[in-house]
Length: 251
Length: 222
Ligand SMILES: Nc1ncnc2c1ncn2[C@@H]1O[C@H](COP(=O)(O)OP(=O)(O)OP(=O)(O)O)[C@@H](O)[C@H]1O
Ligand SMILES: [Mg+2]
Picture 1: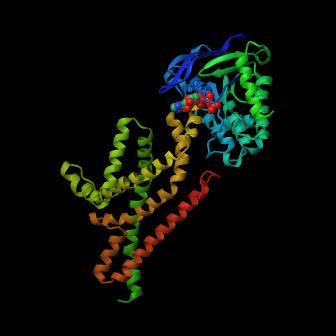
Picture 2: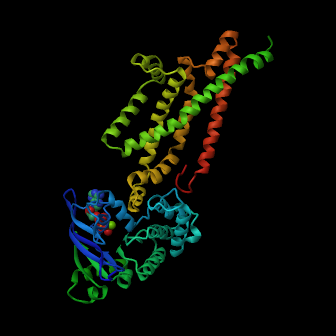
Picture 3: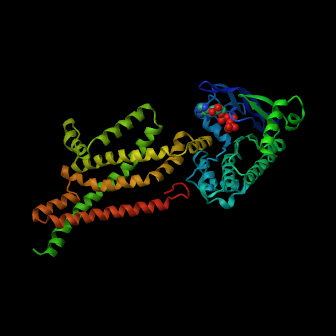
């Protein structure tokens, strides 16, 4: 296995909702173990881009490749690719009628066809990884936002995905709960998980991301390693955005 | 003949026979009515255009047709096109159709109230739509539909008496026969009423137990 091989390749993605052209040609590539952070103002198509990658929203044009296999136009095989591409949502979307443990187990049993015992063991291991093993028997309504989000990360991890997409995983959380979730994500990045993260957490972006991609009007306007992007005067727009953002947040 | 003898030798044995038929009608109709309700609800919500249309038409006609008329059609009408059911079978079919059509409305309503995110998260994990409906949407929807379904089961107990109109001697019919033969209308029909009340109470308690067993903290309020 070559470490410089691209796991995920996104090619010229376009998506419009009616007259609203949300994505206007987005391309990038991701290597194994990389963490990419997407930033940009509201409505620039960050969520749409992530959903185009696993085809929850089919793009109008462009292609997505996972390990050299085409994810777009893959017909029924899309369900295979979705197992390989994890997703974590802003509002967790835990299954309301299932305990934390069952939330993690259910796709292992139904989709991967694991035995119940095998699935249980794996689910408990993933919950342990995110520090939620003690809460295995609790229902989503009994969890704090941070706990719920960690369970949803465990649920994604359990499928052993090649890459995980995070769509503003901490935007619904208090600062304190945000920290516990970001801590889990940082650990994942250090363990070599490949991650695409949409977030407004600039601290996380600067410390964890291999690359920051700044989106504006449906394209990637500027991108680069955090150090380069923040220090090179050539990248004025992203600095402008971050500047506004920090001022607004007052830190 | 004294009261006690009437009760023990005539009324109770007759009602017991009738009750057994009533229970057979209900216990055969309810499970299939439930399955039909789920099927029609899923068909209307997630089926293709043809399935959706057929499910809608079924619900439309069953809801629009008096149950008694439906039973007449099944028992007296169908033989003219060569389909002959016994009165008992025709009743069970009629009840399944009626119970299923109404159940489907409760289940469909409950499915609509399941948040989109549940389906999205299931699909993001690689579930097909059908898998997601079966393992995620339906278990939530059925829990929410339970109060409505329980109403339908109670209606089913009561409208099972319509089977008498197509010659099935169930509980009400058995009561009617005794009452007219012995001119004991008040006593007999009160006794019959008590038995129905007992069945309804039993059903209510059973549904409460089911609700409790499958209750999910925070999922359904009120
Ligand atoms: N299903 C949809 N139907 C119609 N319009 C949509 C749909 N999904 C997104 N949009 C529109 O696409 C645009 C981009 O939305 P998107 O959610 O991708 O932005 P975003 O960058 O994630 O913004 P935010 O930071 O607010 O989450 C918005 O104008 C939005 O209204
Ligand atoms: Mg978004």
